Image 1 (tube, rainbow, N blue to C red):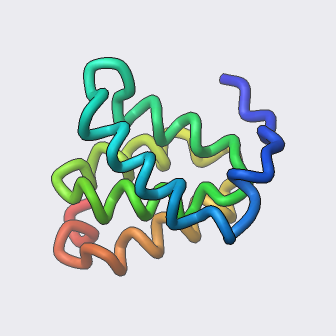
Image 2 (image 1 turned 120 degrees about the horizontal axis):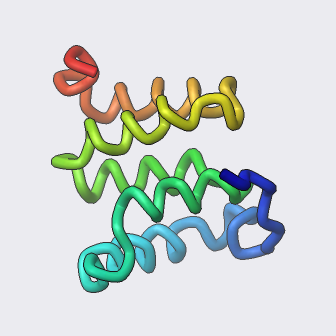
Amino acid sequence: KNYAKVGSELFSNNVYLIEVCWILAIALSRCGSILSIKDAVRSLLKVPLFCPLILCIVANYPSHFHEITGILIEDSFHNQEAISEVLEEISKLSPHNALYT
């Protein structure tokens, strides 16, 4: 697995965050056969603002809570501190699901 950070103003600037979240949610809903949530989460781990973008996926697809947290736990060696922060924020979004993770 290659986790080199991807440099892009689009993914590293808070100015574009809402638009990127909208596009991501639409892409996942309309192109599910091409772009899976698993692939999206793993790809987002390479961008600077991955935490709010992954939270966006969880907020839009709460039924995938366990799948997303599982991916983050599997890949926690990548950046353990940052992924712990994401898991903590995800747990706040869905405390009921967090009890069973």
